[in-house]
Image 1: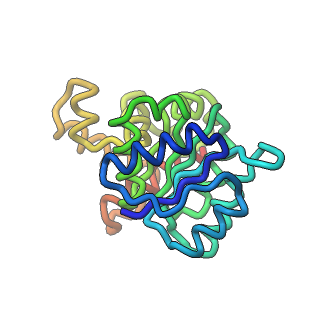
Image 2: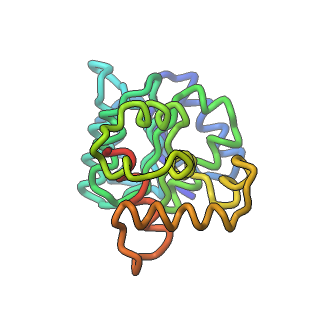
Image 3: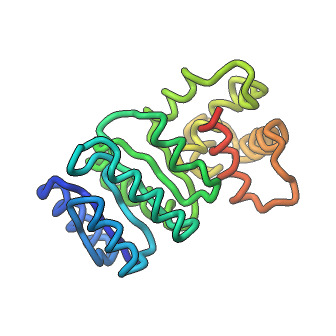
Length: 215
């Protein structure tokens, strides 16, 4: 799997490169600013980009803007964003296209190697992964008239875990219930969010997470 990394801190950039290569990813470029990121994405057409939100020169949202522009040129380009803080607007903008294949992790999560590597694989495969702290923030800020408000407390809990990129089996294990029970909850979630029952299950999971994020 071909990866482009964009991170301005040399130590973290090198660490991400070594970590991914240890898990048999091919890092085709590791750059330190948004301009170089755009060039690398056009040149190498990677399977996924791992991008720091804040990059030179202003250290505000250059990385995110470059990622969004790249996805406009190449819809569905998998992008995993790394950020120091939970910033809801960034996650909403990245998911705004509805194409999926996006992730938003806090940088602290990189220290959990298995979680980070699994997130890269999930996003590259077309899934959506949100950091648990991002999920908690979104739950707290969801308006009462959003489609998500139709969900029961348990269904919101399931959707929150789904947003973290967990499978039904993993959600069942986390909540100490059967996978059959989780399948029932996910079906109810899809129905209450008015998602097309004829759509494939993976895409409905992505759309459910997007509805959750944009609530």
